[in-house]
Image (cartoon, rainbow, N blue to C red; front, top):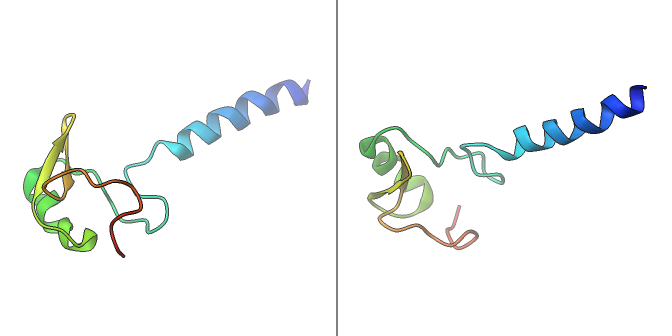
Length: 71
């Protein structure tokens, strides 16, 4: 019985860990509620400005390709 509970728990845990508003490597927050917050965080991504992503804001004027910003 415990084996049948373990697999759904493991799957759910993996999904929850994967859904984050932080980048995985640097733990730098990447989604913000306001354009101002995102623009202020842009310096941590070696860029300027902010762009809309759904109902949130992200640092940098344009969405960078993952792995191409320097930390």
